[in-house]
Length: 628
Image (cartoon, rainbow, N blue to C red; front, side):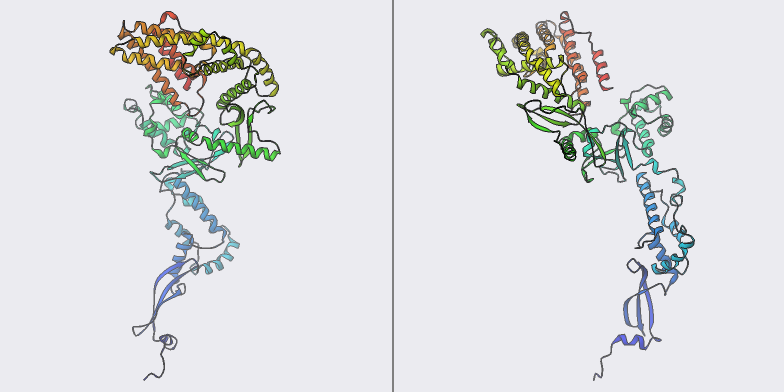
């Protein structure tokens, strides 16, 4: 019944004049560099070939040409080495990036504009990559720039004012240069402008200038700051965009904070007075605040934050390690010994440089070496700032001096005291007599270091300082113990009187005195106050004692004056919060703490007199000056 097997494929070549061919799904294929489609072959309705992939260029040249231009040239879905193609894609990416940076979707022209550009230039017979290569080989000899994009044609007319200069790739601060990237993703942590800071230079970066933003976002930032003003002030600067433009026409970017410049210039325009603090940064959209991203030497993100100082504090240990690695690498290149050392018991380091500088990953690295007090020995370490260096150097020098003095000044002072004196000194906040004497010896060392130009940075100066301190420290420690004995006597008298005052109406007032005494006389108070301030400390304690005597007589007056002191304490606490966390408190700021003690004397024991004229206004003025 079956003479031979019939294969359907035989029909197509044998009955080509009878079969019907249809094509579907024309599409661009990058690997083929051509437009392909699926062919279906039927004979009297019976499928012979169901789905064969064929080149569509010879079947419908017009559609194939359109698909080639749209996918290969406009969308860039093509593997080719033509120079114009790479240049055009690069220029298009730059303009698209500008759109990302400017946070707009109306800068780059649409695909139809690019299609029209190629449609007008590419001949009708070019329907695939192979056709194009053949035509372009001859055409580029005549007109090599025939298919090159111009930047102007890629930018819509409405966005011609947007330039790359307004959205820079780098940010400079002094000798430092940072990469800048942009992210247009509302709600994301890094939405807006991100400055990339290498870890090894984090200690050198300051907030100076970053509040001015990049030029492209500056007008929007100034507008939002004006809108953040309290309503009674804001209503004088409406519409805000107009005043923002007027300000920027006159303003020059400088080290001056943006809000300070704005307050001055806006007041000049309208005459309505207000302060830079009236601007509310919390109301400014996050994308208008710089994001600081700290990266390692391989550009990997370590951490990021809108708050530069918070970022510095968080990464302080890692930044120190990065500086140590930089110092070790620098010493290795020079074939010398690393600057950082530990376990030192004497000055064996020659001259200690005040500044360490090198280059790392193309950036200038700077750190500040200092001696560090490790307890029994000292070491040399690198610090982020000169303030940290100064504080560590002082303590490190003091430790090195004290450990090498042959006579223990604390023990010598103890041996010189009578039993009665020892009994008087036994009631101290340190917990032991030895701890108190050590505190006195440390304070004596501080006084001598200050009097003789310390700390020092080379061996010769250290030897001279050591000889001087060794000759004078024992006597000075003994005298200091005598002064401290008087201070402790006043403290003990004050403590007894404090315990003797009993009145429910005075609970808050007594608590205030308790807090004052605990702050004045505590472990280490002699070194903290310093020998020069011991007479003042005595006066503060006597003033507190007199206050306790007068307190029950006029509770209302005491409470009123106490509230004024508390106001100044709150102002001082606020000032401390404004300072960079983890950094030494400047001397002029610490002095304000003693100004408040002088204010207490003027309020509660005026007859004792103050060390200098003092008032709440003077304290506020000192706080303002500390922030300037």
